Image 1 (tube, rainbow, N blue to C red):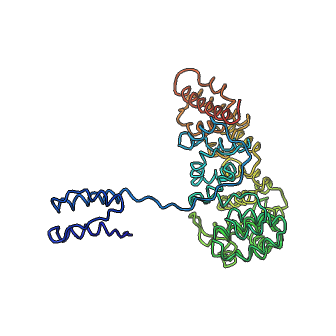
Image 2 (cartoon, rainbow, N blue to C red):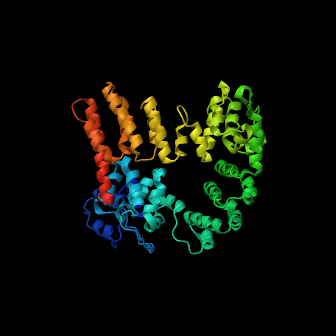
Image 3 (cartoon, rainbow, N blue to C red):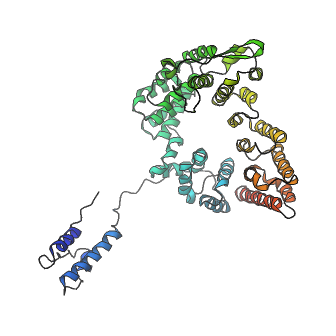
Length: 492
């Protein structure tokens, strides 16, 4: 949009008409621009016009002083946690500037576990980094504390923090009605803990005024105090215009064993999968996706390229509470998974079971399904130690070539069993004459996952000349960097 500038417009008009017919107007001498314009030589009117145009153009490009507004209210809430030591603050600055961003999650996790607060000088860069790294947001919000929440209220780019963090709650009802979203969400969770039905009633009052993304988050918050009393509200949410809300409602309904949703899914599941002869699984996929299936969150068309009836089968299996299959087959998850499936539907059924195990956080089913060729996200359901043991066994049996995705799902630092398995596999590859660059991905993941205390063994592998010792020296350098980072944060 063009902003009117009478001085510039007058100069343009004089140039178009000609200075012989219309000289450039005098500029008022009330400001610096007018004072400077008065000093322009008037001997040649055309030259004067050009000089004035140059002065005005520079003035326009230089901009104007921003008007002084009301200063923001100061941050009055005190964060009692100690700040990180100065060397750790300097390290954080280096990480945020892009030199070692791979180690930022570990730095943040260590600082959080130590009960420290983020340094105030680095908060803007930290909040900006978490804007595009959703995996860091929860940790950053915690480390940022009250000053981070205060800053987020001053910059729309950091609004994500106000959605997930809140301060102390004095009056949860008042905060629910008038707070920012993060504050309202925290208040709602408190209210659900005190009186689930009353909290649901407050949500129902404002439901249609909430944005779709907020509605989906608030539906998920109903998990606190979830009971059969929430079923009617969640059933209404299945008719929401936003898919994210419908999906969130369906996930919670699977956790209500006596709900109509579970009954509908159970009926569909029994029609699709049941015991067959010779210990097999009889599979009969749906022939159509009716209106009731659409309402319960099953998409009509496969986005994966699979045949639609195979897609519907997988969606039904994924949305069915896993306890249903124990009833149907009268067996444990391990025994059910061991039953042969028709080759045509193996991928759909197993993928559906895996999705259900992840969504329902069912350790028994995740344990039964985890194995070679299984979705790696199943490992996120297993306890950290069991996850590491599983991957260590996989590496011992099959080597590192298939383990990269598995390793990325193991929480770091890895326990000794997994660290030893990875180093044993790398050492075997080196001894067997393998190409080190073929294992560069696993080596990089190992640099972030191995406990820094393993550096002595890595340095032993780095002895000598050649590409493999060079690769191990790079790994040792990474472990040394992490050890220094830890010492800066935690001392020692």
